[in-house]
Image 1 (cartoon, rainbow, N blue to C red):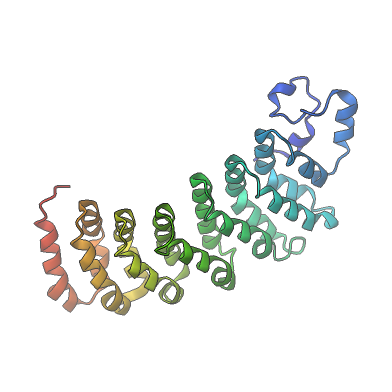
Image 2 (cartoon, rainbow, N blue to C red):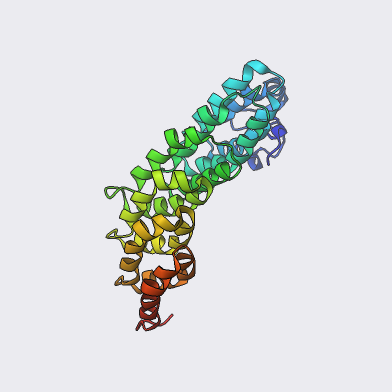
Length: 297
């Protein structure tokens, strides 16, 4: 984590190695002027730099900046607003860097919620959700990872999940969405289900997951197959036998061998979510078919 003093180290003689922090500053007088700026003022100044690496360092040091303003209560909300503005940076390097700091920022704000009330719900989570459909692949992946950490650490309320997160994921998983978005959405949906539990998964994701098992894109079907066992474990026996098994039969006969292979790898988890009668009467024959598959793996 970058130190907040980084923003003050602009008077070094080695200016060319300072990621452009002193591009518009020169000499001791300017150093002294900048040294008098508050952490918030330094943040607002350097996030406007033309040098992308300077802005990246600002994003990397965001937690230290927030820590530095805790003694200035009037700066607590403005620093969060500046962070949101930084999240709109045009360069994916900056956006991705900021996303990597999100779990630390959320944890700190939650621990100091008297100074940063509702900060996760009002400032942090909306940034994460917006990045889920970012045009840059790396930014999307870092936002997905950040969202899962926030869920795992219980830093997001279930109300916020339903109000802010679910609709975006369902949109990304819709048939009209781009191929990459659909593939990522079903993977994220599957990972989230393990953290949300049976009730929310059944109500919010089960129907869409079933639809995606027959998606025209084999990458989507393969991700569905790879996560099928975990999904069955979450939603329980009744939902597995009634809703999911028909889709599993379909995937086990998929024309793409990689999808069938994924089904074989999760077969044990699927069978453990079914009754003994279903395992004997239906799944046993299905497993024999996979054993006799002409493709080798």
